[in-house]
Image (cartoon, rainbow, N blue to C red):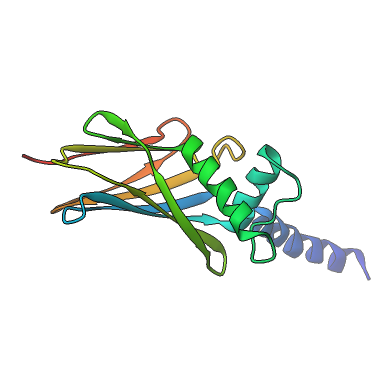
Length: 168
């Protein structure tokens, strides 16, 4: 192979390698207030490989975030992690989240959470620091919906809280 062909090959392959090595870190959360059941229903989607990496760093190197791993144990890790990194405040009071379970999708894990017994909702705040301790570029998108009020937030390490105030 002559030098010009080698140089051309490197010029073409190197940018492709750099592009494929780049990874975006994000999660998406949808939180909907259900006035009938007086609860905040929350669905969070997190890439399974990112969640697995953070679990292996924090808890146990053998954790697998897939169907081959003990699902009851995996739910325990997800619940524990969410309780530490996902804080919901309603009308100025921090509330317990109830982890309901998860399901696997192609590239991500869908986690189901609920906050119950919410009467007379005026404000809801979600502090979402999922994966931010391991991935500095992590972005967490939060969509909040209550009644006719809808708002979306892009949360980062520097700004990790979404607040929705309902009009009275």
